[in-house]
Length: 562
Image (cartoon, rainbow, N blue to C red; front, side, top):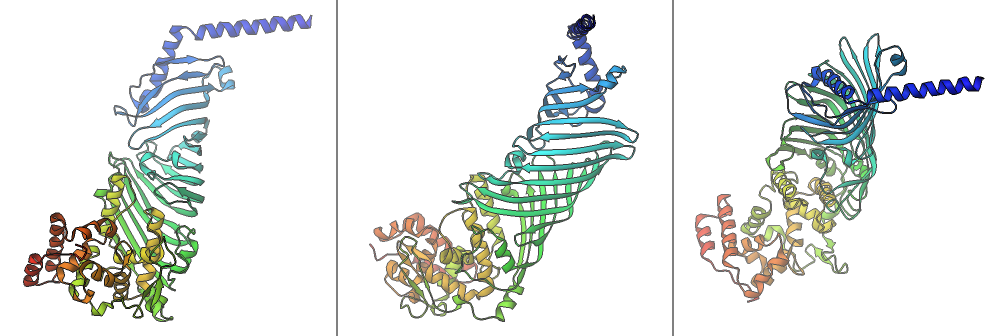
């Protein structure tokens, strides 16, 4: 008898379930369901079309896709492929429809920055203090967000935590081109308070990076890392101006060195931004110790004691580096003062340089013991000025970097989709020539910058320039101004004319390629015009008189190879 009653009850439940499913699957019910969803969305998003809505076998409401604006009447900026709502069972039995879980699938943000697609599981709840949503978000690259958002009488309180966030999870505008994280990930925490209409918000943030290694053809032959850092501060959002700002923030540079950080990003089409970084005391030894080996200087490079200060300000449209404004300053007085108290650096005395990577046995003595060595003091002024005018006009006034030229080189490289080329000062070229390879990678540029700081702090400008002139390449297997003068013009470097000096300076960027002119015995007409332009610049800078300019322009150029 009991078994019969159980079967009858089961049959009744199945019949009721079938009847309910049949009832909710009719076109009329689905049309009314779409209308109710559109009415519920209207106060927040305005008129939003819901092309499809249905109730599945578990009585979950499913609808989408949706195109949502930021505010009623605006253009769609977000899309959700599918929304599924599971009702709260107890509330449903009491005759109320309340969501227990809201699932978002294939959600993307298209403006002002592209984010997604991502999936989210949200769990709404009601309480005496207002509404609350807790949930988890799965990002496209595998990162995860946990969030807890509560809406009360005074506004919205939110706590968001992110874990395992990699490059694919970042908006496209913030991804480094041709670079990818091959290990490690980012994490962050955000505690914020916001107005109910999200017109303003303010919160504290903490971002961490642990064990991050970055690779790619533009980075270097090997992944760079592991890198670790932490940033924290205050973030604020102003909905009226669509501006996100950072205040009272710090980021830890390699070696745990604190760097003050401030910035703004406006969510307009071209993403205008400003960023300011300031480090009041950077201990050089701590900086080098904190760098991964692929970014640090080689053992033979100078390592001065002491500290320096640095400041960098960048602003402009995020996606257009050519339009950026860059202000920077480097104060090496602390390093230089510490250096004066220590022993003379090795590069202040004669040293042996190995100029040919293909033949490490080849040696070049940089000092008076080499008959081809030419002391700086014995060179005519126009030889020195030709090289500085061509390669680094601000050499005697900067601290190792020409930030205007570096910005131009960065912009050119970014727009052409390649590594930075050009923009190197004479100090940076000395760092590269003495201690680094010729590979064109970002890792090498970082190492070059670290070594350039040490060179500027350790040696006077005159010695740096003397080293440069005596190790620079001027043709295949041809290093130093002495051998270059004899090879090209058959004379001592001390006897070079202004036009000959200008020619030698003009071929420094690619002396092997330009050596083809040697065989023909004279430069091409186009190249001679280039040399003459350099003579004009030297005259404008006071390195040549008007009479010397005329003499240089009229003088022919002949090479011993012809």
